[in-house]
Image 1 (cartoon, rainbow, N blue to C red):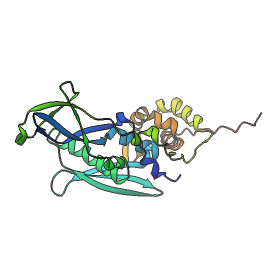
Image 2 (image 1 turned 180 degrees about the horizontal axis):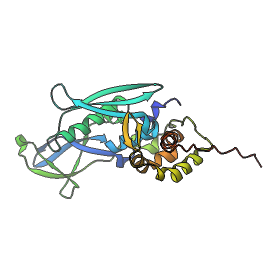
Image 3 (image 1 turned 90 degrees about the horizontal axis):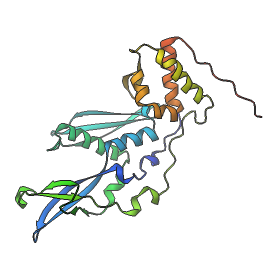
Image 4 (image 1 turned 90 degrees about the vertical axis):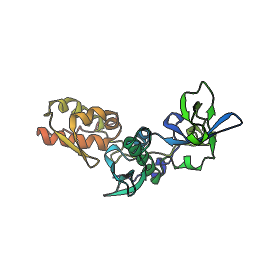
Length: 250
């Protein structure tokens, strides 16, 4: 197994992978002000993990927090062992438990360095105006009225174009000449397997056909993921894949 480049987990995200939330708000001299903070979206976190460590080499789990809320354990396979880092969040007023799950996942990702740079940014004010895309609400002690707002722009120094992206993990069989043959085997033999066949990956059991449909981009990019799928198909069908012979250089 190739060594994971943990520095790549810490790379900056594109602005569309960042969401903003109001942290504090009030009113002064008749004008509403609001401080907002940035977070990486859960979807962007999942994509970063898939890209850097591989979809089969990370998993998450949740449990109740000690004082309410939710704890999330984010595990990454390092060598032959799984390493888990935990963090938690309270359930939110808007989304309840779902919001707690999302917040806990984001905080546990920070334990691995994902999006941690956002915590170094200075306090940022939202752009409050009538045409804002998002709706906010002042606390009751400040009148409780609603307002509209837009998030600020991220500072230029934390945009991806300002820092060369770290190289991602090299697939264990990077440059493997039979990767295309594995893909062709999956395309041709995969549809013939029984619909009940399952694959064990990321410490979870998934329906194989559903997994292939949902993760085809990763299978095409990562030979090790393709190999895991091939092994399940071979076991289910008894049809071994023929490894293509190396072509002699012209």
